[in-house]
Length: 203
Image 1 (tube, rainbow, N blue to C red):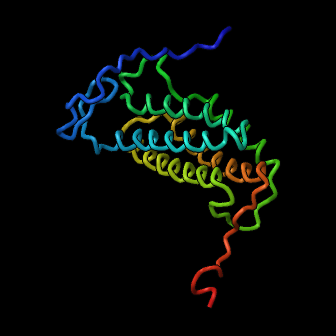
Image 2: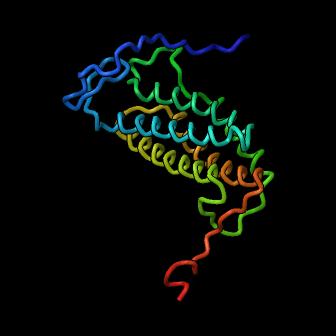
Image 3: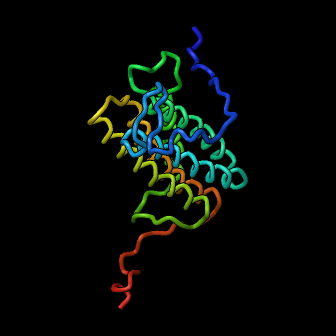
């Protein structure tokens, strides 16, 4: 039996500015007007921010680690699906609306396990560095963690699909593993945390 697909978007973005947000409000997918600094807006806005950084990492990976670029491009689509569901109140969600499902979480877990199996065990914490792609993936990781914290906070006040939080949790782990794996693929050295490299430790 073929798997159900999400609906394709029906958009006509002819005008970019509408002036409807000039008073500090915006609308959710269901049409409700809410303050721009509401927690739900902050949550999916952070997912959007993350998507922009994933785009940068994808661009860097295209030449350096093409197989990673393909995974990151897929993640960009998944993040937009996540944003779609976070921008919609539960009562307005359409059965075929784009969203995160257990399939996306399971795929990340497989990719984490496969990449991690090629890496040496860590003997210290790592710092962002060694390559531009590594640092971009670490930026993705930290923004993803912030998005996860906001989703958890939102879930205490409003219904949030559990898959949304699970996905962000796995994705941040994936960015960490991919950052190390990318350096390995490029022959770049990892930057390990050394406590005595601080100003006081060097005295």
